[in-house]
Length: 271
Image (cartoon, rainbow, N blue to C red; front, side):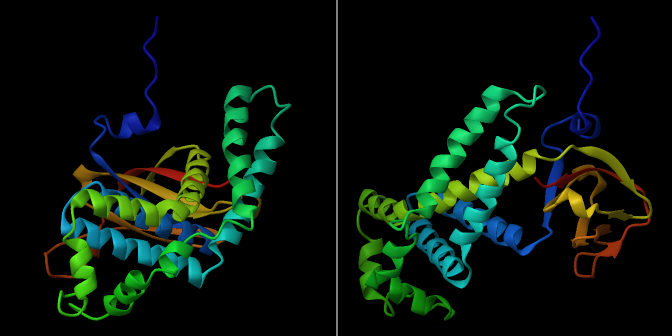
């Protein structure tokens, strides 16, 4: 029996921890979702710790999430994106080449989530916006050092309660943000999994690719071997994207485009 052929990623990166992933959104919806994912990861990381500083960081990220929800119609954008995914996945029900069990499991996650988002009772972030303590913290966040104990004695009192009480309160504040967190997670998961990885090379540190307008590419992912000691600057829009690989010649100098040919894994994601 012949050995299984390695995947593109295994060919490029034999060890799982020898590469770094860089992502570039190609539309405003993806930009918002990636920023929210970043904030939710920051919240989860802070809530896994039990220190006063962990609690402060968790609240600051929660406030960033609610501010992002206020600035843009995130709920509406998620509804549109999930409806589009439901329609695309549902249309594959009669396709013999599709794993029907996986398809039904995906729809079983998407459809209830969509119903919850459309509900009038779904008001993500309302608990935080209506909390006086959080309002005081929000007003001081923009001031350097503005959250000192003498500025916010009530917050200082809250922070110095038992870690268990702080954690329970943080979980309570997160309750009505979970729907957005779940929707962002599954939407980005489906978008990322839509890509077919390809092994390409950037001659002289430069790569450019035209996009088919019908392909609906929403995000570009670039996987770079850490051993190459370079990082990509990715820019793009509806019609094309470019990748320039840069490296630092000196720690304090501006990075320069490499003259070498850089092999990397490319994923064009979009449903």
